[in-house]
Amino acid sequence: MEKKKIDWENLGFSYIPTDKRYVANFKDGKWDDGALITDANIVMNECAGVLQYAQTIFEGLKAYTTEDGHIVAFRPDLNAERLVNSAKRLEMPPFPAERFVDAVVQVVKANAAYVPPYGSGATLYIRPYMFGINPVIGVKPADEYQFRIFTTPVGPYFKGGVKPLTICVSDFDRAAPHGTGHIKAGLNYAMSLHAIVTAHANGFDENMYLDSATRTKVEETGGANFIFITKDNKVVTPHSDTILPSITRRSLLYVAEHYLGLEVEERDVYLEEVKEFAECGLCGTAAVISPVGKVVDHGKEICFPSGMEKMGPTIQKLYDTLTGIQMGHIEAPEGWIKVI
Ligand code: PLP
Ligand code: COI
Image (tube, rainbow, N blue to C red; front, side, top):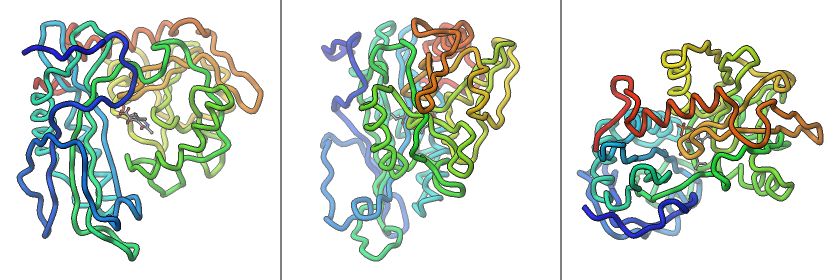
């Protein structure tokens, strides 16, 4: 199959429409069979639930070309499961997990010409999402929903690739206790937009959100979880009910323990102790692992010993092992790689 003529090496993280998208409709209490379609536009009523009350959830995963030329997706079953959890929290009908994985396979196959070649540094980003589509004016869940998946080829999420980032402790909160921080709902991202625009205007790459109850504990950023390395080489990551349970983070903790023989701790991480860590990174599907060089807390700088030039040594090992598994030159744990 001939690849599209795209400058793969210089892609950023932006939307490029591809040939096919998957769509399934929920109506009269059931999902239809679903199909691949070509139209990238959606027509809906002015009063659609998603437009009025933001009833929308999504996922993000990637397809890769492996060293030996296969197209694979990374742990799509976990995205399926997380979308089910998100749906339940927003009173939406879950899209069946096994159909989710099948739909991912269909849509990636149909857009195989857009899956970046091995070694290009780019990947095919897969965006499953679902939303309430029928008119809703009183505050209540919609009765009809659409589940869709589109794909788009992407490069690094942060400009500058793997250059260490500078992040600031945000004065805004991302998630409330007992709220929706643990699900992947559009509303969590809408309310982070002012915070990210403010952070960028002040010269920072991202925000560090704190727990909104006490504002003493590290939560996550707008689009990735934190991972820290202690001076004695332990991997530490915040435990919280109000952050998104990152699939990348879960995978990295496994890799740290089982591939690199490192001790891992998922626990409360206090802002006060951040200055003690040797390395810091942001992990997520889009971010992969992006190193953090500096955290700024209201003018007070916390500089990690790993510096502003390159990834710290342990984060680099985690990065190499995880991407090695995804690209097929390191053997993956059972069930992590879905061959398309
Ligand atoms: N946290 C937030 C708020 C995110 O949007 C994402 C991205 O999906 C993550 C963390 C990382 O999750 P994952 O590794 O499953 O992509
Ligand atoms: C992802 O990593 O898939 C996300 O959804 C994060 C988003 C901020 C692009």
